[in-house]
Length: 271
Ligand SMILES: Cc1cc2nc3c(=O)[nH]c(=O)nc-3n(C[C@H](O)[C@H](O)[C@H](O)COP(=O)(O)OP(=O)(O)OC[C@H]3O[C@@H](n4cnc5c(N)ncnc54)[C@H](O)[C@@H]3O)c2cc1C
Image 1 (cartoon, rainbow, N blue to C red):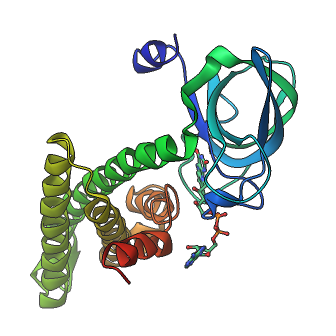
Image 2 (cartoon, rainbow, N blue to C red; image 1 turned 120 degrees about the vertical axis):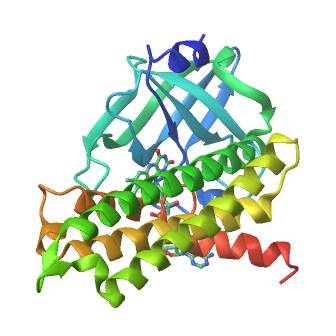
């Protein structure tokens, strides 16, 4: 009903976890979904929701009660046009301009119980599982973006002349390019290795967190180095690297910040 049209590109989905007072601290969300017979009544606010304005439906993370903790979580599909579901505003942001980012409000929003995804009360566990996949995709996307920036920058450096020679022939630029390529290659190998574990049915939470952490940091470093190598051109909208620099930055925040990745990794080491 929802997934197939989304995969076919006929419907746009969004996932609504974050709230004005609870981002990293998912256990602190206060959006409630109280069950009355064959429906839930949802109340709460969500923010920073990608495609929140243009989506056809949102997968909304709710709790049966407002108390902290991992119990009583339910994931509900709430379709646009459902009375009580409003987009209160779209937000202006640094990068990622091809998607909108919105605030959503739910006020006595009646949702059929058949819109529940997974078993009742299993929402937290299911959400954490979903986030592993999202982090893998974020890591892979970061490497893909960094590779594109690296290739572009390499080409630019070979062609740009200064002091009568290509800037790529200056050792400092050459070494910067080597560092960029080396960082990408090592992060990519780790992302691939982790994706293979995931494909083989493992649940490698530590490695997924490490892959997201390292790949997104590499993407930011590569984009920053690219601007430096392009000089003034790198800072201009006419050249693609300033966009890469703005877009790459999100991946160190979305789907779990660098710091949250480190907390998860630390826990996996028993720290
Ligand atoms: C463009 C964009 C798109 C987004 N899309 C979505 C979306 O589609 N759906 C959705 O649900 N959310 C989305 N988000 C929200 C995103 O997931 C959150 O911004 C992110 O999880 C961080 O939450 P926060 O912004 O509330 O920061 P906070 O949780 O307030 O954190 C602030 C700072 O404190 C640090 N911090 C917090 N807790 C700890 C801790 N325990 N230890 C150490 N440091 C800590 C954080 O790492 C961060 O540096 C999006 C955000 C952006 C910017």
